[in-house]
Image 1 (cartoon, rainbow, N blue to C red):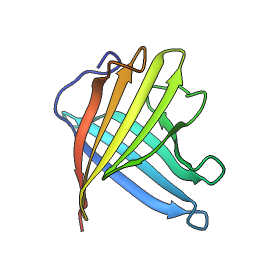
Image 2: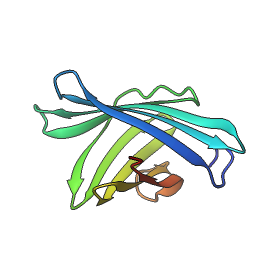
Image 3: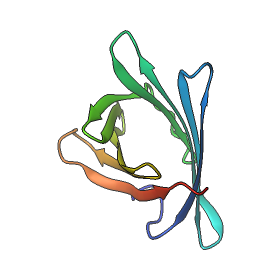
Image 4: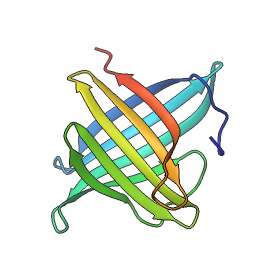
Length: 126
């Protein structure tokens, strides 16, 4: 991507439900060549007023989003979009099975033509 070197990496995700079940808190650490190359902290929730899911996303690149990503389910995919002065980001989480999901983050300057910034398949380790 324009913000980080590309190529294969390994990620470790820890997710938990917290605060009376209202929030899913997810921490991710990505490693490349034995060194941490990217980390994220995401907080997912559902807004009962506008009936949309929200994602408050923070990462090791240090950008602070002015507002959360917002969206909903389309089939097996949760699609969340947010805009900022740098452009638009779209997070797409697709449920593959009970133990696997895919995730991609896409960027667009105009919210029309989307380019993949990060893609991955994540599997639960028992």
